[in-house]
Each structure stands twice: as C-alpha cells, then as structure tokens.
Image (cartoon, rainbow, N blue to C red):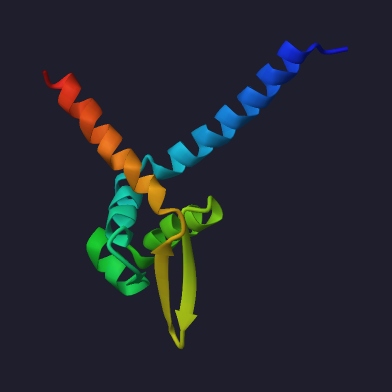
Length: 106
C-alpha cells in the first residue's frame, strides 16, 4: 500500500505533467504572437492570419491547439470566427519570461 508521501508525489507529478503540456502549447512563436494579440481583445481568424502570416490552415491549427488546452475560446458570427483569451492570466508568463531574459543578460 502506498504511503501518503508516495501519493503526494504522484499527484505532484500529474500536476507538473499537465502544466508542462500547457507550456509546450505556448512554446511556439506564432502561438505567442496570437496570445499577445488576444491580450488586447477579441480578434478574427483573418486578422490573426495577417499577424502571423503563413498558411491559414497553419494558423487554424495553432488556434485549435490553444483552444484544446483552454487558452482561447472562439465564437462564430455568420461566416467569421472570432477568438478571445479564455485565460488572460497566461499573459503573466510574458512578464516573467521578460524578467528572466533581463537577468540572463546581466
């Protein structure tokens, strides 16, 4: 029978695994650009495509990944799909990463 310490380690391991998945989703330049843009408000897929560039299908895949991990949500208005940040706190990571880069540059 597992003791309390083993069970706590399993719970922590599971939590860290889930957190790592979210961080991997964010660890792409295009997805970071999308999140940064959405931090200033809702945006259409077309506008996000203009921002990121490349194929529209690639931008759609980035958005689908962000949606699947609870970072963004979408809504349809006729033929246009709009996205917004579901978890704006993700932008706190930008501040943290900027601070790490500043410290590294010292």
